[in-house]
Image 1 (cartoon, rainbow, N blue to C red):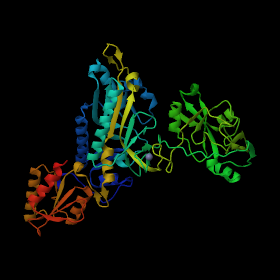
Image 2 (cartoon, protein in one colour):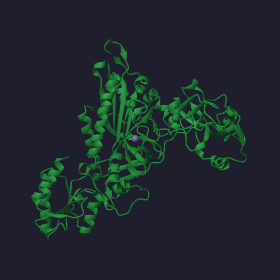
Image 3 (cartoon, helix red, strand yellow):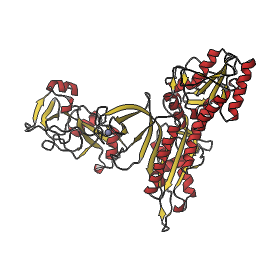
Image 4 (tube, rainbow, N blue to C red):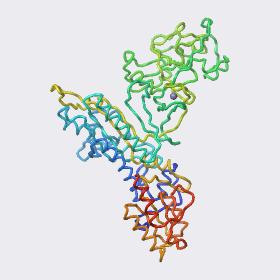
Length: 572
Ligand SMILES: [Zn+2]
């Protein structure tokens, strides 16, 4: 392919909103253009790489027996009402009405569409397991689309959905998907961090996220220095520090703390550290299933730690938890905010984080303005209804598996495999006949990969000052042929080399433009083609060849060049 015919316009300048390398470089290399906020178009060069990522994903999905279909992007709102997500998803779900007044959804994912399709076709357990996928357009009405294709509104996702007779069959597909995902990311040249939501702590393995490290990542990951523990901060657990026992502890003692408002002021006033303080927070839970579906709970945690609300909601089996407002705190505890403590607290269910259970000689609020208790002992002065792991784990905490030190990284999610259970098959009433002829509800799994984000992440991992450094597997072209000037003997040699390479299936971008050599070299580096072959009259019949990631070029004959590129591309 000739450069002049490819509708490529490379740019020196960078748009002000392009804050990350992938966005800057895709834009500058003429791979993408922006139509509106969060809406991008792929130009020919960008689409070539996109198609290669797509082909890798398709090959790996087909290799594990997953069947490709294609659902519509616009889905009847009725199906989303059946699943309950019409109401549970907020403004990011793009809802529209057609001219007949019928509610429609522009798919952000396709559990409903696939469930409806399977519901109509499934009659017998013999049809199971059924694993279907599509590679299709999705839309999420992000409030703040940013970072180019890392967080766009319209994007392409490979999403697969599986239906099974039993857990064992679901697990088999889930494991096969996990392996296929590892192969996909490895073939794309990506270093992913698989993050298991349960990480062996909560039992079963029902969810695994595939993250890439990213300074703009919207996930915080905690990783162990000593073992392969990796968890999203939302779910991360840790080993509680050993409790230091004092004996004997003096009796509970009230202490006046006038004008002391914050934990810091209290610590200074009493000459203690935040670790010696029991912080008590009153939470309101929405639809909690635990503790007789009570609405308010007191949560006690060590003064230097914070409550992880995702963990708390999961523990209470609640839809959502939020801090109670000041008026509710006063009404429920009889104490202003800042002086709540578990000693003598009645009428509220108290949950203790591991960090304050079984402790002694701590300080806590005494349920009265300007008053605290010291020498507080768990079991003697207060107890909790339940003890749980509720803290937000942070760097420096200890690994729940091996006790090693945890450290933090920011990550972006590229893929997620997830055992859905019966959420959709029950709400959407999917059933088939089992061996005994009885109605049976299948169990379901879902498996997604964001294609555009995967492509952008490849650039994030493979670039330098000059531009993109494509892995050969996803490069828009394998080789860039750069004639010093596209004229005379040089032109003939460049054309001959192009033909020879293309004859062997090597994808060549021939820079036939009448630009200065320096401009052509810069563009080849910016676009990031893995092999660059310079054709100049000085060295003919030899060429100067170098890989994009090599410093020095070497002289090479036509046959050798063909041979080297054939070998490199044969391994793809
Ligand atoms: Zn560990």
